[in-house]
Image 1 (tube, rainbow, N blue to C red):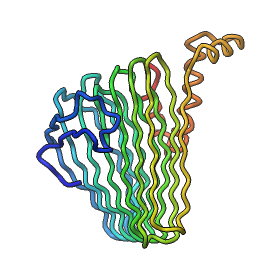
Image 2 (cartoon, one colour):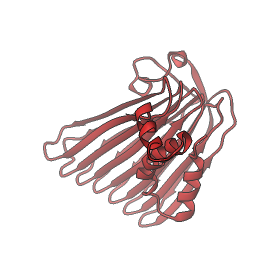
Image 3 (cartoon, rainbow, N blue to C red):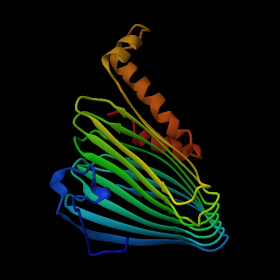
Length: 275
């Protein structure tokens, strides 16, 4: 995945498997390209806050290069308008012994897609968690392509999705473990909740391994806020709105509790407050 003058959506490409058909063949203009590089042995924390207002088909690219034995805690907060149509590309290289703790929090948009390509060298550690939501009658997607090329590398992911009425979220994680990547671990967990009629949460965890020593675990589940759940909480004295918010709060807490730092945790929680 390199920096391009445009990105074209092609039918049949796994990155676009669950995208609306109307985007096939369309070109997204590259509007922004940036690089984050962490020197050997360094440690840092970065919070990227995106509140774009573009209405056209826009692509953005971020390259991240972590040198040997460095550590980056990176949080991406993307709160968008209902008419936004964007694709964000993240090209990430974790060199020997480096660690990336990535929190991805994405909300809204007519079409809001984030594609991560991650390459892990020996002893590299990629830990990812996040939350995505769409209540705009649109499509919000988080896609991971992880290549565990190095021995003793670690990849763990926990992504939650929330889809409102006539909206959808998409989560795909495609992890490939090379033959020479001995004693590696991969864990993928995806949880979803549908909160309104015609809401959809698509999920596709996919791990391929050429190494028999790899430890692999993955799973996905989807729940629905339905009449029976609301009625049960009504019987406990809660109104419909209170009941709904209580269910959603319990779901969000699974991810939000992983955020280090009270200020950042509060900011993320406010970002996803019920509409």
